[in-house]
Length: 173
Ligand SMILES: Cc1cc2nc3c(=O)[nH]c(=O)nc-3n(C[C@H](O)[C@H](O)[C@H](O)COP(=O)(O)O)c2cc1C
Image (cartoon, rainbow, N blue to C red; front, side):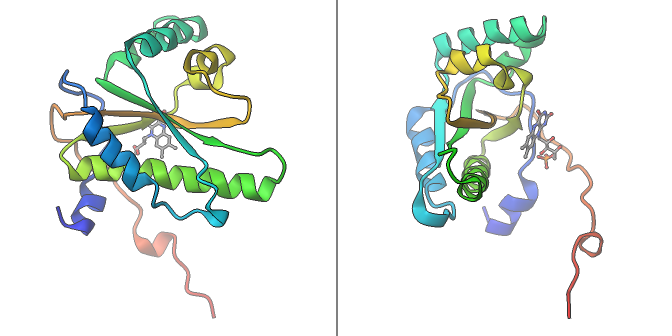
């Protein structure tokens, strides 16, 4: 896929075919994520691929947070918790590391799309909850970026409108 086409045509998918993404493909995506720009080369990103037990723990935690919410965690065959490891010592560095982690997560979604996979960056409430954090074994110094959903798409997705360039770009003197 052409690079620009990949950027323009990546979409959020909420319906997936049941087959999970194989580990070799996931490792290729994570290998590419390493090339996110990263001040001080801190490698702050962490990715946890949820196996059946981890998904079960997260679903139980989700039910505690909001009854009925766990079924949304069954939408995609492959779930990846994306976090960043922060020091808590330097707010500037922590912010930069959070931004670098978000870029790494986007690389995972974009390169998944390039391979014909569907993706979805979701930030469910359970990941802001101590029970959800414990379900995934997150450390105190980790900040959650999101739960990346991956799998094979069921259908095409229409592109939501984007604001035109003139609305958000200024060329200063
Ligand atoms: C940080 C972040 C968090 C998001 N969290 C959610 C979410 O919790 N629920 C949701 O439906 N979409 C979520 N999204 C996906 C956006 O809604 C989606 O990207 C947007 O609608 C544009 O659609 P597109 O990805 O197909 O271009 C999130 C995206 C980002 C970058």
